Image (cartoon, rainbow, N blue to C red):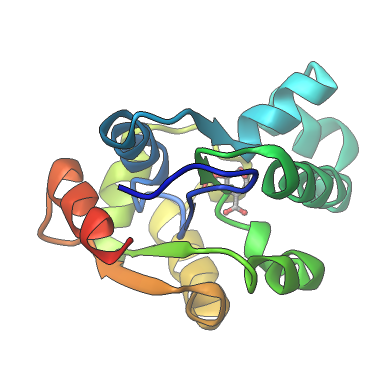
Length: 170
Ligand code: S3P
């Protein structure tokens, strides 16, 4: 297994519903390292949920807070790091990710919509979840591919199987 240093062992990216949080936790367990999640970092820093930040301060403010939290985590976290699904929209973040090992969890619309439906509260996905998700996935796919060191098609895999695939790539 890889030795931990002063940088994340692996950064996990992908759209909402790809299973980033679950896979990052399992992966960290298997590697014996800590897990960190930039949505949680923003919430801890602000004392407010991501959803509340979107509502009270708007998406652009959230994106700034997110970019800062990602930069800090990339600099200081030495375990597994899961990014929020939209973090790759930031050009500076993409440039920083070029220096890291990035696992892209790819997922089809049907699977993603089913997973997101079970876990609501995502501010960008209110109302027509499937339609919103499709738009967002289409727009971001090139960005996930751009930052990915490797991509895993998660559609027919359990979270444990996804972790196995990631471990083989490291
Ligand atoms: C977002 C994804 C969320 C969270 C915020 C915005 C997005 O994270 O950062 O709601 O733009 O895709 P998850 O990918 O963990 O749901």
